[in-house]
Length: 65
Image (cartoon, rainbow, N blue to C red; front, side, top):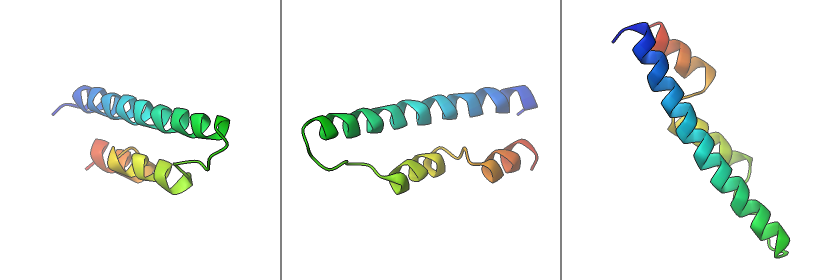
């Protein structure tokens, strides 16, 4: 896979992670409005980053094996 293809793939992973995090954030806001505790804390958001492999070291390892 050439470098440009890797960047396109990573952009897709970033888009997926963003959509997932936005959904989690929306759920937290709805729960706050109803006076309930939040569903997703910091650990859950960090897991999204891990799931999609978009943390710093993962990206560097993918781009520069």
